[in-house]
Amino acid sequence: MSLSKETILERLRRVKGPDLEGNIVDLGLVSEVLVKDGRVSFSITVPVHRAAELEGLRQAADKVVREMDGVTGVAAVLTAERSGGGNGGARAPGARQAPESARVQQARARTGVGAAAGPAAQAGPPPGAAPGAAPGGRPRTLQIAGIKHMIAVASGKGGVGKSTVAVNLALGLQATGLKAGILDADIYGPSQPRLLGLTGKPELAGPGRLRPMRAYGLEAMSMGFLVEEDTPIVWRGPMVVSALTQMLRDVAWSELDALVIDMPPGTGDVQLSMAQQVPLSGVVIVCTPQDLALIDARKGLNMFRKVDVPVLGIVENMSTFICPHCGSATDIFAHGGAQFEAKRLGVPFLGEVPLTVAIRETSDAGKPVVVSAPSSPAAEAYRVIAARAWAELERDKKSARAAPRIVMES
Image (cartoon, rainbow, N blue to C red):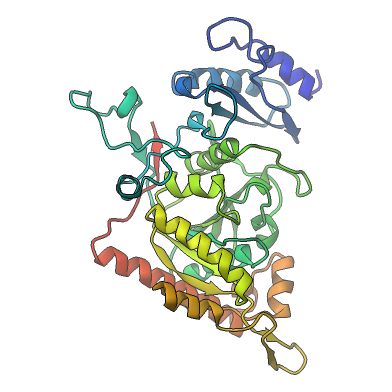
């Protein structure tokens, strides 16, 4: 029997619905099924209040598909929508999301931010609860060993070179002797496979776990490794957050000093959910010098501040154009705007990156400038930015801010 959407749906009809009546396909719970090179992806939509108890349903669906001939991997995601129609407040607890860190709980208590859009704060077990039980009876989570810091790289808008900064920041941290990795959190427009020159699919590291891809000493994970470059991801926000949570939890990361997270642009549901649910050590904001970009960068920065994520600083990308022929500098997008804005907002200015042909060429070729031209001014700029960002992390740690942890459920 050939592997196709139809044969997979037929196999999924073996899985009973939530109340052991009907099956998940005929009940309309299964999303669009994607099949590529033996890898199968789909989601199952369930009521939000029953998501935890129906994790077994997801596991059953995963199992019946994984047993099919020709299947090399399965990404089965449990996604949830609130009853009453619509998905404005939906989230995806089926992915067994990490609980919010103490700093996020405290920020929510102070400001009320995210009370409607995000998951409820998990302040601890109620009086008399059994040890190891979280509120609502859900098991407590365990730490993912080895990852010390998670650094988000974000921007208020697209087109400012955020992904290029993210990969060179990770390589800059590595150049200072740290062990680093990168998670491409831009599900709709993943860039890291191209920037790192990586092709192919991640290997399995065990049941339900993937090995991160590797390039230039970096560990990397991206949705771009799982779908073709020109294949659109047509998912709702809760499904995206669920997939990102799985890429954190179900990837066999090594011991890392820093995992750089290349965030999607903007300040929408995905960005807010990630900021609330992932215990970030800090965020680096990327923008260009002109006023229009700075307006959006300010919005992004303020979003992270509202959920109490430390802002490590601002990077001014495409700061000055360097002519490859004569070496003269031209301020195409103005100059110094990000530094002025950082001073005005009271956050560190991490540095500026010039607009050069070399950065564009090396990025398109999958050979980031930090490793392909380490002696260039651009590479030096990225290394300085990495060193300053790390210094901010260390300064925060010494000032008694406990480092957040990545966690997973047993």
